Length: 280
Image 1 (cartoon, rainbow, N blue to C red):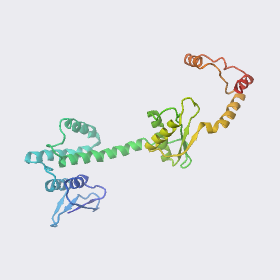
Image 2 (image 1 turned 180 degrees about the vertical axis):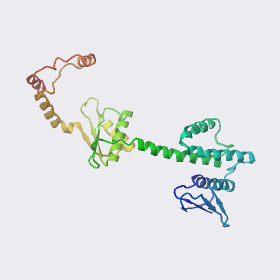
Image 3 (image 1 turned 90 degrees about the horizontal axis):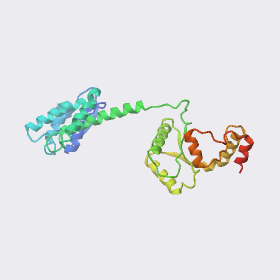
Image 4 (image 1 turned 180 degrees about the horizontal axis):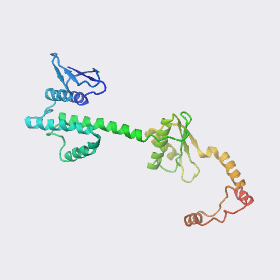
């Protein structure tokens, strides 16, 4: 048998049903746009229309009860076939999903105790509409980076190697990958290895493995410690310009002052005093 249809509107329910029921089918997407599917039998006889073809496959397929075990079940299946197009109506999609979801709380299959063409039709309706919804959602998520140029964007993912990948890491990494893909840029993994008491190579290895599992494609791995000379130079420059100060307040007291909004005793030190503390 040969199934002819328009390339822009394949009868997925009939094609899926034929595959499930072991019906040999040659597909030919050459009809003009808007044409109804046509099934050409070995005898040369023809059937027209997606649901007509689906019902025929349900009747001849090798799967037991694929179109119902009796007249009542066949009529129930017909009800579902008439209901399935509702999934293509955006305004009614959520309500239809809720109805089917509630129905399947008490039933394994839509009709009877085995798979039928009703299940196939509803599944295809859901799958097609979900694909359209995902596409619309993808368009809605298209966020621009101001002044970004394609091919010149570089993004930094900077986890501290003191633990395993968590949801916060994942969100940041995936967002970086999104913008890297959007602008044909690069993701650079920067390990903030400035707290040696809490860090280990085990965490480095596991973080890299986990972000690769997420599908993150990074172009390089760097470490904050690689840039210590530049950081030291910049810090001293800021101190000399009066834009930074050295604070030797004990950690516990510093945390208390920060929470209470208390000014540090070191904040008003002179540049000379700050440089002296800096070089200790």
